[in-house]
View 1: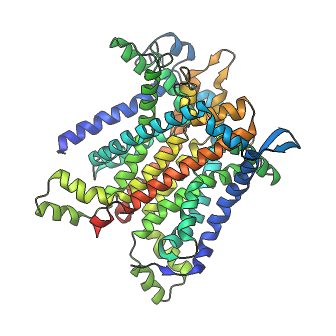
View 2: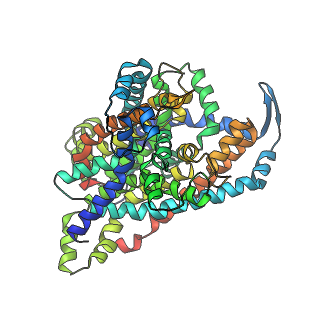
View 3: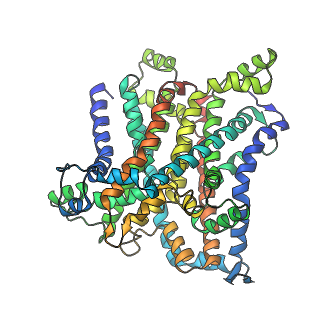
Length: 267
Length: 290
């Protein structure tokens, strides 16, 4: 493909991609009556009322805080446990390695609906209901396997001579792993962090089942904009715009790793 | 190069195993338990053996939902994987455009799934939604609440809009990992753009594309929130996918036994196809690389 065609094609795609998000932004700056009353390509009387309500109403902003807390815990647990495991899968042959590797991924394959009840019972038994850690742990079910799979790919791209040389130089495993190996695959760590953050952030079923008030996620709060008078579209749109912000910040921080550091990725 | 053989590697895997098994094994066993019992209430249950599984396998509405699901996931993969690769090929390799493209791509992925459906409801409304109004102005008779084909087209647009960025992000990552030397060699040989793609870029992207394809297959096969919010499974049953039908049985009729049997069959279908995809992708092109 030549340069001009690429830019035009990509620009066209990005315009299409941004249209629904623009529409959400457009709605978030208007009152509900205005949204339902007239078709407007852009808001004529801009109001920040929807955003102000979210930032001042505890039921709303605590939803964001709860989500950010459990998503951060989940991302941290996923990375810390997946890093050594991915190293084991990429470097060693051991009993049941191939089966275990695929078994991990099978945990993303179960339809959630019927599993919610036993999940609730299990977490009740441990007294974890309505805590951030419960949601963070539950989300490990699908994020830890993904983290292992992605990280294993990156690690397999690193030649094993590096490990051998370090061990010959007298490095202990933990010192080698933390000071030499992890910096080498920091691209993979950044990418994995983004994917874990993203999948935990948008998950609703587990998060809603395991929480009532204290750890209620923002996605569940957003279903409450339905009231006797119908859906408050303006408020929902403003909340939707705000749900994009934290993840966009995460990808902003890992963008350079994505662009450059992938040089060592799985190929 | 051979991997080192050492069973002590299990110690490195143990934390992952424990943390995943904690949430995985007991709920799965409980669901298996439900699937062979008739549950009337707390403490009142009768062992029924494979009866629910026989019911599930003979349920014609379930079979319809299954074909719909295969069609949906098939279309998703056929559209999103090539489109994601094309987008990744068009993305800039350096400069500010990289950051801008990456952040833009991530935006649809970060919206909670139930909100995606809600936003598309209003986006496609002919009176106050941008897409709906545009289609209306063009004079097309389009109504996703009344005509099955229109509902499918709307769902596919939403799905492609939502998830193609995931494929593009992974494919872009794979492309950036190809050393410049490969391209130089291709230029010296006078390879065409197609040949460069076919014999250098595509094989080198196999790893990331495997992950992308498995993720897209699993998640599209399990899709629930977006179509449930946008179409509610209708019009009629035309967009009642497996998950929507499952929830109808599990919650609507509160029939845990058959719903559990259904879940297990559902799970095994995804397992089987994911494994097949994985095996095929592991082996395809191995000869070329050697």
